[in-house]
Length: 386
Image 1 (cartoon, rainbow, N blue to C red):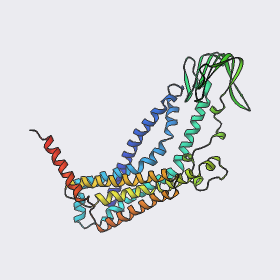
Image 2: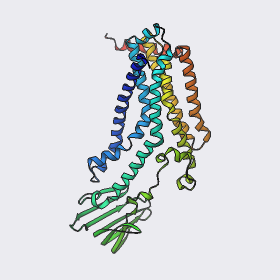
Image 3: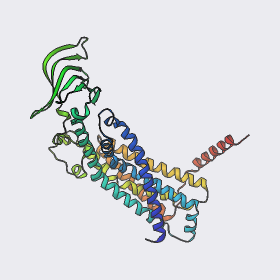
Image 4: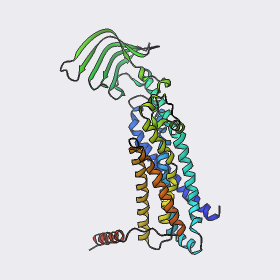
């Protein structure tokens, strides 16, 4: 690798890392705020909160990395154009392939990163996230349910206790269960305690009442009890009972699924669509770099031409990625749709390499350029001081 290639690789890869970290951090914060109840209402520490929400970072990186690479390549080529480096390099007789190989090296590194994330790291992070959330929910009485607070354990299930004595017994227990849309169950008890046996984990309540309100009934049914067991088994942290979703499966589990797996028997099409989405994921960084270089690699002398090339590259990348998303969605019902990403990526790479090898300058149609010129002139007149 020559000094020019090293310069381009260093500049592009540095910009890629900055964009990747910035975008991932912003999106991670927005996702983490949805789980802020782990820290506030469920009594977890900041470290637990960061650890749990951080498990989604590999998945975010896998999705964001190709976009970050595109931004880095566009930034580098625009910088080289602004500093007249592309014109000097072209005037010196340097082949476009010399420049392109430097960008392609960065694309290969990113493609390998995406492949590793999609095959193992991202599913592993999602598995850890599910295991950790289950363990937090299993910590129901000791940490999650705090005296004097209404704690939502999951959507529709709220628990409140007045106090907990030194022996761990709960006093003044209130349970409101609205998980079943057809029936609302409200339990009030003077005291309660945890009971765990071979059948699961239960909240054993004493001296209270159960109020059941069916959706179609005006009056609730109230039953007074001396002892009542409320099942909490589904909130235990037994990892042996966890069923991982399709997104949480490793790529080899998608290629060679267990035929006796209940989820596979119920959703074989989801396994197939997810597998093909994982397989094409590493191809997007390479395709994006080819698109960006085909539009922006040739030296151009006007800023307007450069701006149109940037818009063209963004439009081509957006179209390619949207076709991939749509193919994955429709491929669940129509398997033939899963071939669309392979065809579009192959066509993009083929046409892009042809344009790069021939030194073609890809420009929008004349009517688009004329329309943009007219809009620019109109805005300039509108903004000009009278």
